Image: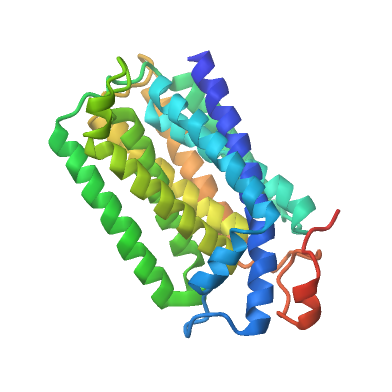
Amino acid sequence: MLIGLLTAVAASICYGTGSVLQAVGSRRSARREAVSGSVTQHGGPSLTSTAKAAMTWEFIVGTILDFVGFGLGALAARLLPLFLSQTVISANLVITAVLSVKLLGIRLNRAEWTSIAVVCSALVLLATAAGPEGSGHTPVSTHWWLLAISLLLMVGGTVLVRLLGARAAILAGLLSGLGFGALGVGVRVLNGIDPFDLGALISDPALYAILVAGVGGMYLHTVALQIGSVNGATAALVVGETVLPGMIGVLWLGDTSRPGFAWAAITGFVLAVAGAVAVAWFGSSEGHGGGSGGEQEPTEQAAQETPVRV
């Protein structure tokens, strides 16, 4: 349990730091592309804009941290109940919020700090209440369903987000979270890991669900960071990657709480999600941001400046 918790915390730190670095790169690219008119007719970023955002050094470093976080998160998903591993990993919201104060020039208000404190308290409750993780053994038909749902969420979600354009920040964050949640479920049920069997691994539909959900979730997260509040988008992501995987882990994969601690697990889970939603609500406009990373008109001067305030 302790190794799993430490692994999940390390994954959370990687993801949180990576999100802010990706936001820095995405915002810089989005401003430059806005000046050149490279946006969709709905006001959202074009595919070219998103691709250019992914080529900034901040985004590249953030992506490397995401890959490290993915590896650590996958290990945590095998060592802990999903309602605990996914929620601890989702605490990267705290890292994101704190680092955004420095790197994006955002000033968090009292409501946001209170919401972050609620999330941290909820994680303590969850860690206290968590029992042994389930086996993860499921019929192969479940793996096919996971692949089909992942494809529907990522492909359909991408189309919907592009149609909504600049209004889709929270939706893009939520869909990316659902993708990462599907990824966590796929890691838990994946065949051919223990004991290692390459044939079973590459023939398992869950492997391809992981790839679809991971790539799609990364793209939608990038879009959310380009067009909306970094804290709001990340909080929506938290909800998506926490609620459904946690429920699936309990209802289908055999995850349990410690005897007599079910109330603490439920309370912690609800508070964690509620705290994340509160951060999304209070931080969705970033209107209280006052630094060079705050929302600005995409002028030529803004396009040439770095949004990082050191």
